[in-house]
Image (cartoon, rainbow, N blue to C red; front, side, top):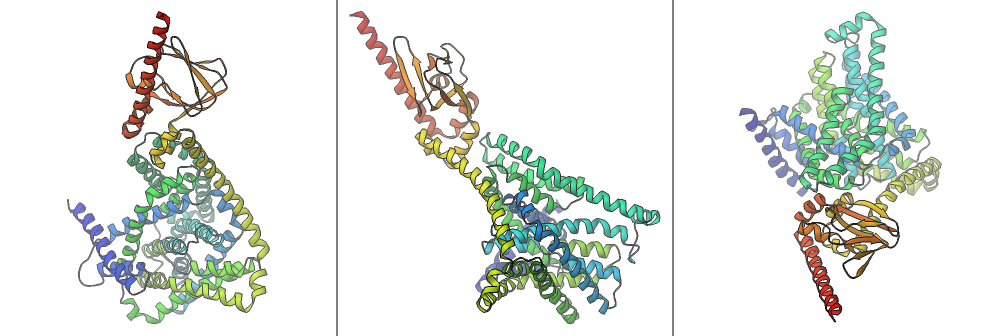
Length: 584
C-alpha cells in the first residue's frame, strides 16, 4: 500500500507543481520547461518543503523518454537514417571524441584523474533527446533537412553511449576505479577479453539494428492491422503502447541497448504501416505528460547549492556544453562541406545535455571513477544548459541571418552541392512515403465516392472498413451467390455489374450498389441467385465483421436495414404484379 501511495503522490505532485510553475514561466516569457525544472527543484531533497520520491520520478521520466523517442521514430524511417549518415556518423563520433578530450582537460585543472575525466567528458558530450525534440517541434523543424540531420546525429550519439556504458565497467580497474567480478575477470584475462566484450556488444547492437530495420516492418504493421480490424479504439491504443514498451524492454534485456533507442526503432518499424499517423495521435497525450515528468525528475536530482559552492566550476562546465560542443559541431559540419546554416542549426540544437549524461555520471560514481562532486556539476550543467537552450537556438538563428546578410555568397554557395544531394535523397524518401499515404487516401476517397453511405462514419471507422473488407473478383457468367446458400457476408460492388435473379425477373446492380444484406439481417439463407454479367470487383464484409461493425454504428445499420426493407418491399410488389399478370 505504501508503494501505491508513494507513486500516486509523486505523479500528483509532479503534475500540480509543473502546471503551476510552467504557467508562471510562460507569464514571464520563459519556456514552460524552465517551470518544470523549477518544480522538480522545489520537490527535491535539497530544498525545504515537500519531498517526493525521486526514484519513482526517475522511472516515470524514463517512460517519457521512451514515448518521445517512439514518437520520433514514427516520423522517421530507416531510409532517413541512411540518408544522413554522411554527416551524422562522422559528426557525432568526432564531437564525442573532441568533447571528451575537452572534459579531460577541464578536470585535469581540478586535479582529477584520467578515469574521472573520461566519464565527465563523455557525460558532457551527448545531448538530451527530450530537449532537442521539444525544440524541433516548437520550431516546426522535425521534418526539415536540418532537423533530420540533427536527429540522426543524436541517434548515433545514443548508439555510442550504449557502447560506452558496456565498456566502462571493463576498463574501470585500469582507469583507477572499483573492479567488480566481471571486470576483474576481464582484466585478468587481458586484452583478449576486453576485445571480446567490445565485439559482443557491437554484435548485439548490430543484430538489434538489423532486426529492427529489416524484420520489424514486416511484423509490426501486420500486428497493428489485425488489432485495427477489431474496431476497438482502446485495444488499438493499448497495442501501440505494448509494441513501443515491449520492443524497448526487449531490446534492453536481450541486446543491451537503451530503452529509448529501442523505442525509437519501434517507432521506425511502425512508421511502415499506414496506421502510423493514428498510432502517433493515440500516443501523443502520454508523450507530453511523461515528458513533463522527465524535466521534473531532472530538477529533483539537482542540488542548487553547488552553484554557490563551485561557481567557477559550474561556469566552466556550462561554457564547455554551450560553446565548446557547439563550436566543435559547427566546425565538423563545415569541414564535411555542408552549409554553414546546417552547422549553426546542429550546433545550437545539440548545445545541452540530458538523460544519457545522468546515466553515465551515476555509473561513474558507482565504479569509483567520478567523485560525487562531478555528478553534481553534470546535473548543474544539464539544468542550466536546458534552461538557456531556447536562447542558444535564438542566437543560432541570429547568426544565420547575420552571416547571410554580411556574406550572402558564402552563405548561399558553401556546401550547397552536398546539401542539394541530401535534399534530393530525403525528398525521394518522403515522396515514397507520401505516395503510400496518398494511395491510402485515394482508397478512402474512392470508398466514399462509390458508397456514399459510409460518409456518415468517421475517418478511423472508414480505415477500419478498408481493413475489414475482403476483396473478391468474378468473371462474366460466374455465380457469386446461390439461392439456399448459408450467409457468408455482404457484397459491395466496386466495379462491374451483377444480376439478382428472382423467381420471375432479374434485377441489375452496378458499381456502388450492394447485395447480400437481407440474409445477414434476417439470419436466414440466401433467397436469390446473383450472377456476374461483367468483370466484377467486390468488397466483401464477412458475417462476423458485419455484425461487429454495424453494432458500433447503429445509424449505418439503420440505413442498411431501411434499404433492405425497401428492396424487399419492391420485390414483393413485383412478385404480386407478376402473379396478377400471370393470372390474367
